[in-house]
Image (tube, rainbow, N blue to C red; front, side):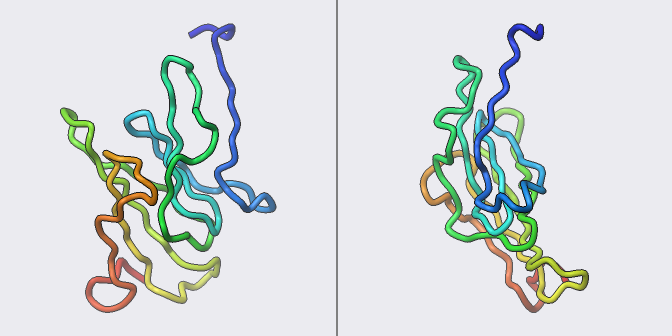
Length: 132
Protein backbone atom coordinates (compact mmCIF):
# COMPACT_ATOMS: atom_id res chain seq x y z
CA UNK A 1 0.00 0.00 0.00
CA UNK A 2 1.42 3.41 -0.87
CA UNK A 3 1.02 6.51 1.28
CA UNK A 4 -1.53 7.96 -1.16
CA UNK A 5 -3.96 5.15 -0.30
CA UNK A 6 -3.52 5.32 3.48
CA UNK A 7 -6.59 6.10 5.54
CA UNK A 8 -6.52 7.32 9.12
CA UNK A 9 -9.74 7.17 11.07
CA UNK A 10 -10.40 8.01 14.67
CA UNK A 11 -13.42 7.13 16.76
CA UNK A 12 -14.21 7.11 20.46
CA UNK A 13 -13.93 3.76 22.21
CA UNK A 14 -13.81 5.04 25.76
CA UNK A 15 -15.94 7.45 27.72
CA UNK A 16 -12.92 8.28 29.90
CA UNK A 17 -11.13 11.07 28.06
CA UNK A 18 -8.88 11.95 31.01
CA UNK A 19 -6.84 8.71 31.04
CA UNK A 20 -7.04 7.73 27.41
CA UNK A 21 -7.31 4.24 25.97
CA UNK A 22 -4.79 1.96 27.71
CA UNK A 23 -5.52 -1.48 26.38
CA UNK A 24 -4.79 -3.33 23.16
CA UNK A 25 -7.85 -3.99 20.98
CA UNK A 26 -8.55 -7.19 19.04
CA UNK A 27 -9.66 -7.50 15.40
CA UNK A 28 -11.58 -10.49 14.04
CA UNK A 29 -13.92 -11.06 11.11
CA UNK A 30 -13.93 -7.33 10.21
CA UNK A 31 -14.87 -6.35 13.75
CA UNK A 32 -12.79 -4.25 16.17
CA UNK A 33 -13.17 -5.22 19.85
CA UNK A 34 -11.97 -2.70 22.44
CA UNK A 35 -12.48 -1.80 26.09
CA UNK A 36 -11.68 1.52 27.72
CA UNK A 37 -11.51 2.42 31.38
CA UNK A 38 -14.89 1.88 33.10
CA UNK A 39 -16.47 0.91 29.76
CA UNK A 40 -18.10 -2.20 28.30
CA UNK A 41 -16.48 -4.39 25.65
CA UNK A 42 -17.38 -2.66 22.36
CA UNK A 43 -17.60 -3.99 18.81
CA UNK A 44 -17.13 -1.68 15.81
CA UNK A 45 -17.53 -2.95 12.22
CA UNK A 46 -14.83 -2.48 9.57
CA UNK A 47 -16.09 -2.22 5.96
CA UNK A 48 -13.30 -3.42 3.62
CA UNK A 49 -14.79 -1.86 0.49
CA UNK A 50 -14.82 1.55 2.17
CA UNK A 51 -11.53 0.83 4.01
CA UNK A 52 -12.96 2.32 7.16
CA UNK A 53 -14.98 1.59 10.28
CA UNK A 54 -18.65 2.27 9.71
CA UNK A 55 -20.44 3.43 11.66
CA UNK A 56 -17.64 4.98 13.71
CA UNK A 57 -19.39 3.97 16.92
CA UNK A 58 -20.06 0.61 18.58
CA UNK A 59 -22.63 -1.61 16.88
CA UNK A 60 -22.82 -3.73 20.01
CA UNK A 61 -21.33 -3.91 23.47
CA UNK A 62 -21.25 -6.09 26.56
CA UNK A 63 -23.80 -5.66 29.32
CA UNK A 64 -21.03 -5.35 31.94
CA UNK A 65 -18.29 -2.74 32.30
CA UNK A 66 -14.59 -3.16 33.12
CA UNK A 67 -12.90 -1.37 35.98
CA UNK A 68 -9.26 -0.41 36.23
CA UNK A 69 -7.76 0.46 32.87
CA UNK A 70 -10.16 -1.73 30.91
CA UNK A 71 -8.91 -4.97 29.40
CA UNK A 72 -7.19 -6.25 26.26
CA UNK A 73 -9.58 -8.62 24.49
CA UNK A 74 -8.28 -11.71 22.71
CA UNK A 75 -10.04 -13.81 20.05
CA UNK A 76 -9.73 -17.56 19.67
CA UNK A 77 -10.98 -19.35 16.56
CA UNK A 78 -10.17 -22.11 14.11
CA UNK A 79 -8.71 -21.24 10.68
CA UNK A 80 -11.63 -22.67 8.71
CA UNK A 81 -14.52 -20.88 10.38
CA UNK A 82 -15.96 -17.40 10.92
CA UNK A 83 -17.03 -18.21 14.45
CA UNK A 84 -14.87 -17.33 17.39
CA UNK A 85 -14.76 -16.36 21.05
CA UNK A 86 -13.69 -12.99 22.45
CA UNK A 87 -11.97 -13.49 25.82
CA UNK A 88 -11.55 -10.76 28.42
CA UNK A 89 -10.31 -10.61 31.98
CA UNK A 90 -11.53 -8.03 34.47
CA UNK A 91 -8.83 -7.42 37.06
CA UNK A 92 -10.84 -4.99 39.16
CA UNK A 93 -10.09 -1.44 40.26
CA UNK A 94 -6.74 0.31 39.80
CA UNK A 95 -4.65 -0.59 42.83
CA UNK A 96 -1.14 -1.86 43.37
CA UNK A 97 -2.44 -4.85 45.31
CA UNK A 98 -5.41 -6.83 43.95
CA UNK A 99 -8.50 -6.41 46.10
CA UNK A 100 -10.68 -8.93 44.31
CA UNK A 101 -10.28 -11.99 42.15
CA UNK A 102 -10.09 -11.44 38.41
CA UNK A 103 -13.11 -12.43 36.33
CA UNK A 104 -12.65 -14.25 33.02
CA UNK A 105 -15.42 -13.71 30.44
CA UNK A 106 -16.08 -15.20 27.01
CA UNK A 107 -18.32 -13.64 24.34
CA UNK A 108 -19.59 -15.01 21.02
CA UNK A 109 -17.55 -13.37 18.23
CA UNK A 110 -19.65 -14.86 15.42
CA UNK A 111 -22.46 -12.37 16.00
CA UNK A 112 -22.65 -8.72 16.93
CA UNK A 113 -26.02 -8.78 18.62
CA UNK A 114 -26.56 -6.12 21.26
CA UNK A 115 -25.63 -6.76 23.98
CA UNK A 116 -22.80 -9.10 23.02
CA UNK A 117 -23.68 -12.71 23.84
CA UNK A 118 -21.90 -13.70 27.07
CA UNK A 119 -20.97 -17.39 26.85
CA UNK A 120 -19.03 -17.81 30.07
CA UNK A 121 -18.06 -15.88 33.19
CA UNK A 122 -15.84 -17.19 35.96
CA UNK A 123 -16.66 -16.83 39.61
CA UNK A 124 -15.03 -14.01 41.54
CA UNK A 125 -14.24 -16.38 44.41
CA UNK A 126 -13.50 -20.01 45.12
CA UNK A 127 -11.98 -22.64 42.86
CA UNK A 128 -13.49 -21.12 39.70
CA UNK A 129 -11.94 -17.66 40.21
CA UNK A 130 -9.53 -16.54 37.48
CA UNK A 131 -6.90 -15.42 40.02
CA UNK A 132 -6.04 -12.85 42.62
